[in-house]
Image 1 (tube, rainbow, N blue to C red):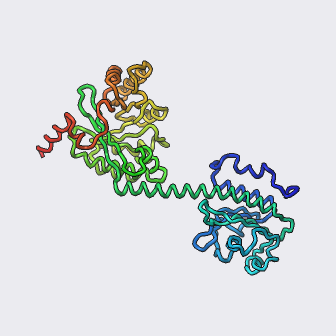
Image 2: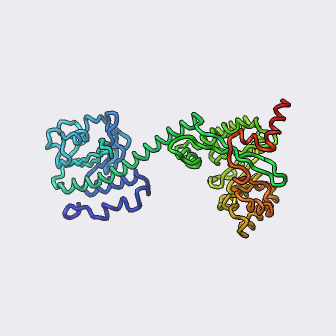
Length: 423
């Protein structure tokens, strides 16, 4: 113990120097247990949780291995911890054998327990979570109220970490329930945004976009991000695609539908099973630039059997960042979609025109179609024609719309009706 029994400031604050998330909560708590155990010259320090009538050891630092093990548990009623919480034992015992209540517990002699300090840990709602404890096998008559105060200070920090984790777990559980409900009940609408050919101003395809009903309101990106965070990203994307592609038979055979999949979803077993059920010559799979690709060879190999059967591949958001060019070069897509940040005000910006023209030339050399997203003005449309873009998509040519409105567009409804009459 340092002179005067005071823990140096650098030891007290060192566990938090890197911030609450650096190294993870578990590592921070273990570090604090190690500091307090060493400072008080004890044998074992631990954090316990009370659950289901058991005391579970969640975090342990032990100078003598094997006596208290992380993940182990024992009966709560037979523990010092329960008795500290309900007041039958004091928080500080210099010699447990000198306390009649402690001596009534077999563990006091069999472990043995000499010096013991314990501080209850509570949730922000006031519920007892467990305890922050430290004990030595031998008595320690030099322990003081100041040592207990240091334990309480460390316990307060640990309680903050635990409560933050509990909040995250609660938020994750709520998110999981919300996303699961959305997937299971298809609690979203599908909107269809037209993609037009510039050489004859006809509809070439529709991009299928999700619009979610759940409260509180979240943008589609937020819904998909939430689903990914709780491990349901591929299920959410597949659920939207299933609902969207139910309309495939309503469209003429020369109009394709485009769905958005992340690389993780493409690599999933569920995606492969889904694609096997579809007329792939009428489907465009869109891979967003913002989704990281860990292994392009693996992704290409996964897609190849489906591309051989007619599936077309599009790379989204080209021009928005470095990843888009990796996607284009390594995936060799059939369609390159220019990001709206490149399209916006392109008529007023020679640099944007030069980049879009270069991408159009590159696309022709690669055998890829170029689609400009986010077209909002006639001037932007004219500029895109001049630089060689072949297809456009945006509010100018058509907002995302319900299926009946999509089918009613010129050049779509007549083909669809004619096909139905023939059938």
